[in-house]
Image: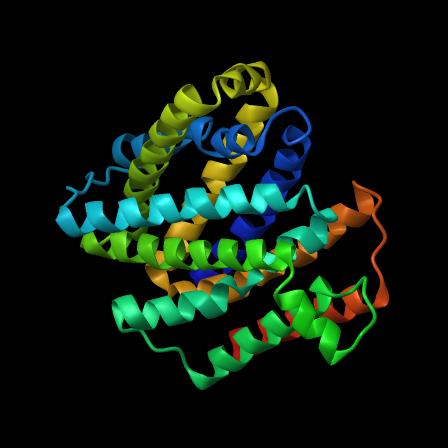
Length: 301
């Protein structure tokens, strides 16, 4: 099995854990605070990854350049927006369905990859992406009567529009992180990913801290009070991001994110076993389609 596949599956599993922890944080703080925790508490771990690669494994730290700085900034801002929208979705519907709306990310990443990097996806990868996106759409209307009218209505509902916007921002961020990592021109993908992670997560932390200080000062106290859960979120989130960045250095962002749809299967497991939320037949069919799309992706990409 190829390295990027193993890394992507592991990152998807860790991201599901992070999202689960963030849902609990949303009960004691606002969207901004829960979003900050994912970045702020992850900074020490991101730096640790970089230092281990440098001092333990002996890899040189690559020098940033203008292209790297531009793409890291674009990607970091896109991820902040995407993450804030995703956390905000937790207030509308159950955990599994709420996160499903952002799952158009692979299709959007394919478009942005073509526009910004000139990367084309194969017909097999495109079919796989469409299958997984359709599975997500089924999940999004799973609690409504099945009809074309409801399917169309679900696309323009408030929650789905927020989710689609989140997917757009995630798609831009994914392509941006791949572009930033490749811009370093360093021969080791782990060090490229680590350097990208440190710069991105530090920038995100500073920007969100300034925002909270100016607009939501009470959130700073809530973030500080939740430091135990925050450290867990930071560790898991930073590790997952390190995995994403490594995978996207090795493979196109759209393909990595299509395989990453496996996370929703982990999400449903969390929904059933941790949150005790019921899963109906349509949601099950959606999960099967997502799994089918992943199989097609791995075999025919």
